Image 1 (spheres, rainbow, N blue to C red):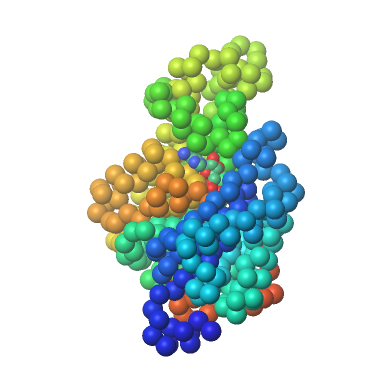
Image 2 (image 1 turned 90 degrees about the vertical axis):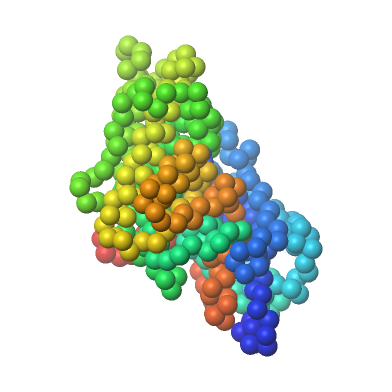
Length: 365
Ligand code: KG4
Ligand code: ZN
């Protein structure tokens, strides 16, 4: 068992991570939660594009076809054999249930066959763990922001590794808002990166859009009002029309660029203001700001958090751009501390569609 290996003097912990919560099938081999030996991501964008979003059944079938080849490729890339793996980790929540089952069952099977521990990982926590990959560890307590297609949450990351949620979105996630705004502009799924591309030539001050703050103390987020304001701003540019997409597609490129840049500025500025508010409320407690999730691939947000952290004189933990998007290296990184302590999850650990925090909300509702 791992703790016996560690007791015998081995200090390196090598984890095989598996991720399949949505539309990426991924496997990675990571040493000590930091050094990526191999990371393979097979994306399914092409399979879902014609539907304008992820179709769960198509996703789980594609995971089933790809999971073993992807794991094999990661092992080959790491030039390691299975015998060098100390533990196997998989994302077990939140996500599409059929998709989660494919990756977590494969991971359990491999762990069982190798006689090493299996560890189930929360995908949202893993997005924050990505900031520790290939870079120095960030000091805690830290303020963590996860902005992905399914989540927008602020956390206090406590010194011993646990998370305490400070705020969350009450409607759309930031990435979802990007995707919906992009769809209004007629851009293909997934829209976030396309909207960023279109925004590059635009003027972020051209269209007035709200920065939803939800009262003076709230650390929650809401993007649905901003989405409606964006829709109206597009419709305003044509008289009597109500099909937002055809109006947007008929606009000159410079206007489309202005709309995209203004929307991006509204989301990014709202996120930055909330981060700043959380830092103020922390009264000097936070030693670093840690960000993660697909939206952190956005250059305007990356520059914004870098400037904010510098101004507030705290460290910044920000993953490499490719590690912001769903990957398995972050799953391995998130499992490392538990593996080092010799912990393991039972074989019957279920896959769950919601995160622990969403389940707590359901329970208290
Ligand atoms: O973390 P992620 O890969 O998957 C989830 O866990 O949801 O995040 C995907 C989300 C999508 O909504 C995508 O549009 C958004 O991240 N995204 C971006 C950018 N790259 C990905 N949003 C804005 N700008 C980007 N460059
Ligand atoms: Zn994700």
